[in-house]
Figure 1 (tube, rainbow, N blue to C red):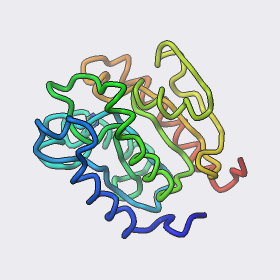
Figure 2 (cartoon, rainbow, N blue to C red; figure 1 turned 180 degrees about the vertical axis):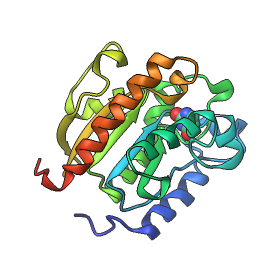
Figure 3 (cartoon, protein in one colour; figure 1 turned 30 degrees about the vertical axis):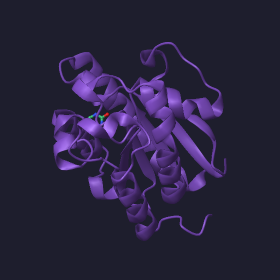
Figure 4 (cartoon, rainbow, N blue to C red; figure 1 turned 90 degrees about the horizontal axis):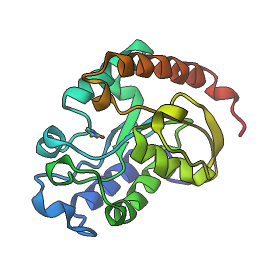
Length: 203
Ligand code: URA
């Protein structure tokens, strides 16, 4: 384990660096960076796409309607925000909530990788296709549609840590679609089971 694994200081120092980031132009139209937050010793890390309007205004991840849905999914498996770490692929809000571009993702993801190294989670849940595509590329897993792979558990090593990678739908997609909400609930039951078994992971 790296010396900084689980370190509050390391995660806060990184958040301060992200707050000043000018590596891509996204920051220009924003109020705050949204570095991510939660327990730096969490066994579960959740990765979304990018801050939305509420997140940009507050500097905190998933505080809008999709965030409320996420809170409900977490509490359904006995977890609160204090138990998990929540981050995004990009840390500044893209204008009008457009998808993050390739260059923006390339510029920003070293921060996410550093967060994964510091937290050292046992389970990583990717919310939506952008984070799923990025994280699963480390295991050379490709896919066309998130609905084809959601709820699948991919075991692997990420930065030297044994980890289970689980793609699922983005909670925002479930806001108006009861079928997606059921799928998310089903995937969170799988996530709960994987976490319960996390002590036994060797690879
Ligand atoms: N959607 C995301 O992907 N991330 C947030 O932080 C909020 C909404």
